[in-house]
Image (cartoon, rainbow over all chains, first blue to last red; front, side):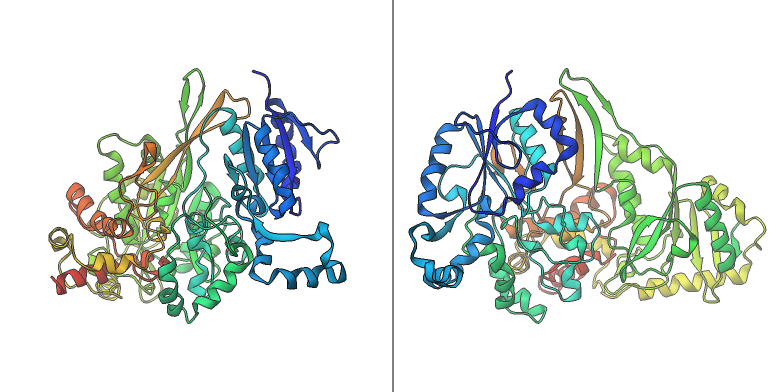
Length: 248
Length: 344
């Protein structure tokens, strides 16, 4: 079997997820035995229009970026969304919580009217084209990326957690943030990160997106039990959860 | 060998000697909570712990483990761990849970992975010194284990600060070799231990059960359609926390993972939980328990009736961990069982 050609493209993002692939170091040589990278800005100079697998990093923040993404989709047999910006819109969607003209003026000042700065409401990749696989997280976890890639090369469906972060937090035997009166998004956010943030003294920020049936109706009563309000919860959800649509 | 009366100093010296000889796990401080972990020195052993975040069953049924390695030709090799270890300081209710898992993992298709670890372990039970905030093991009938078998040593701290160390099996006797010089426990010592047990049966009841534990299966069977299931489940996050901290939950999920050579791989199993949305999702993505209330009810039936039918006792041991772990505060088994009784 010839190795599938893989191209990595970046849209609006910090390119930190691509960097996580570069950071895979000890696994990189293994990776290259099964795939043939043809475009990967952080890893090589070559470019190509021929590929089997397209990996998309970043979200779509200008209308003019939709066409290239659609073209990539046409050319690729398999399309993977890489990282929170691509899977859920990520922190880019924070912009959508404000008036777009205000945002433009605040960021670009007098140049706000320039055509190439025509920023639009943010779209995750699946809001523009069909996505075959999601690699969640901000940033992604190299081990999970490698697992997903091996699954799809073997023709198997990767098992991406559909349960909340609480599961992995319990498996790591952390005391719960809520026991200390600290708000955490763990109960409504998809696991897969190994409860990285709660295991290191933070709360869950929600970078992997909501579980498919977050119990929104419970929020008010549960928050009240901890002397908090739904507004307190919303504030925590804003960073990654603004105008987020459910993903796979 | 008969039971020995051991001072704190001699107990520490004995534990340090054990740690020098073999792998010893015991309760240690984790922030202001407690967790079972590998002991490096007796000073880390906190027999005064109230409750550990996860139950010590994790040493027999780990959070995640490799079951086997395989290749694409269909050849495989089971991974069975048989390294001996000492599990020190298990509370009585957690031992009851382990004894229940022993039966369940032995039943039908004996689980080689669990049973090998269990066989390799020396289990030291320690009577509770400090009741946790939510414990109700006394109400469930699992505050003490003096009449039970299956563990190797029983340690009880008396009110004068000395310890009764009581061998309960040949393995336990062997572990006590280092305590030969300690005096035998006399009648006063045994009476003092009885007093600790009597107090624990009374004090490990932060929640009361208004019925006898054996009445619970019938109570549940008569209340499948009770409004409490919908009412409580309305607040359930389906996060599985109540399952994952439970000493008697033993469900797991199995996954295969291929290595980079695309020829070899390993099969793992990881703890699962029946409160999770997709616990009952099967091939074709069909979920036969998609409703929160159905999942919520299932957990109580599991603890109070289904497992009871298999092994003859309540499979909620009253450790209270689920009550602490539940963010929405809806997971208290004692509260639910009492409500079923009062509102039938």
